[in-house]
Length: 306
Ligand code: MEV
Image (tube, rainbow, N blue to C red; front, side, top):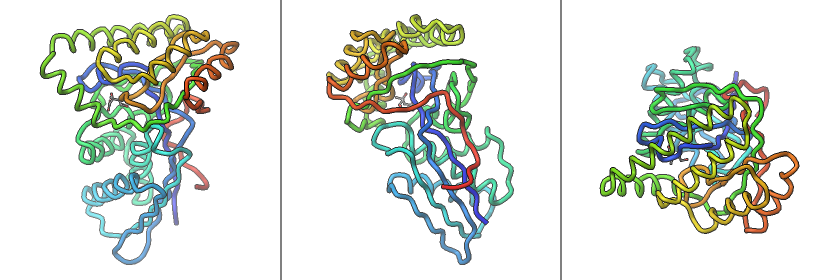
């Protein structure tokens, strides 16, 4: 018997970096998913089949943590498949971890709650990476669009009907732990300034949340662009990300910002339907690649095939 679960990738909407210091962020799940198939096998060696080496560490640690917690000695085969590469920064590690725990929970009839899956996945991620707020794990578990405060102190769904985003990939894989540590270094030497920036970002998160719920997209767009400026002040943007953001706004986006740790990965732009093509064109002209994703999508789900 085998079971398959999938979990979504994510996009940070507002509040990156500040969330590492206990402030809130907004995150949305995307329709690029990671699939995990789990089955019991004979013998005492697990069989891990993952196309990406990076994912296998998360799978191996998740299995070890799960088996340790429930004193399980049986061997399992875990096979993974992704709709997306870990290169673009959509969160394949968190998605694979979450889907592995859910599949193991089903296989061994442990009936773990979503909250338990979140907690165990967060534990494994911190064990491997050492840093991170866990916003990506909450998104992979619950899906939709969430307000999140670490370490799962707040995981609140935002009931929104529309979130028309254009996503541009910078072509550069961001080194998230490096940027988290870089901000932490500055936090040591410039604490009052950094706290002021985080509080300003928090203010934007709460304005954006309210406006998202009310559907005031132009206001949400202003919050995104203002958040980008604070990320520039934190020193995590790059000339290319700045150019992509500026060109999106200049060609009619309601607002735009980098999304994630900075240094590369993706930017997002909030767009009116009639401006989408122009904004996509502008992003391509600056050297970015437009990634087609739908947002505000489902969290963990059972699948029939991988
Ligand atoms: C990275 O995508 C977002 C950060 O806030 C790190 C984290 O929250 O884990 C920089």
